[in-house]
Image 1 (cartoon, rainbow, N blue to C red):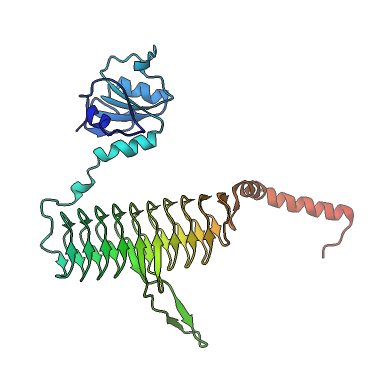
Image 2 (tube, rainbow, N blue to C red):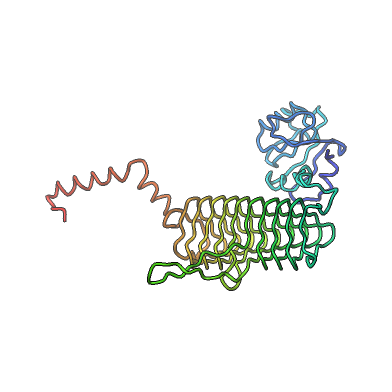
Length: 358
């Protein structure tokens, strides 16, 4: 149960209180079409606002482009007692408000900080108010920061470190010597610090494994989705910078360096020893080859293949990847049956000119 006053007290630059009682209460958040007298609603279109008012939603967060009843709209009289907030970005407003309604931590039994079935090595150091779930395993000389949460069946091997307030969901693996920063969130079944894929072929065609003796270093405020795999480096570090977010099923190979505040959609894969700058975005199922450099502020469309360096900021797409504008022309050329038609036209031209095909 959240009051409008609590939302106003967030002091978010993405929210402006407009009108209505600060004692208005919402118990849940739903889309406008499902609104009722207990629901906080985010609206970005006029019909959504109308639906929210009709349902007598107690709290409405509206995009600034909409005319609110409090601003003198004749078509939207406010006799429902609705409290209004305004925002320039509905998504940023959601990022500010939805944590108030997020019951994620209720999934963990917070009454019992260290579950009796957890296996914690005597040399491990746990900070203040650390939660460790059932059957978690924490190895020797592991260091876990204050207010961290370690989910059930998670394994943290020796000498690994976990930062303050980091949330590790159940069934996560953190390998030996790996480092996670503060305020990270690691979703189930993700592996941090598995061996990098490195083998030396013999003349007989046998593949000899090259041991991977490096580690993974992850910065602060990093989020990794479910089923991600981050490989340890061969000798030094595989690194993911502060604020980077990865969707489910992403794979980061050994020796990769990823900068800060990047976003990778599901299925992103990057091969060994490649480098990604900061503030980049990658669409789903994008693949980056080994030993590739990508500079800051690059956007790559989904299902693209990056096999060479990208040295200029901008938008790219395709396989092989090319500037987005060029890729749209390529798609126009190959799509809608254009290529077979072009082949027929060329064949007719050759025949008309009496040329012989080589």
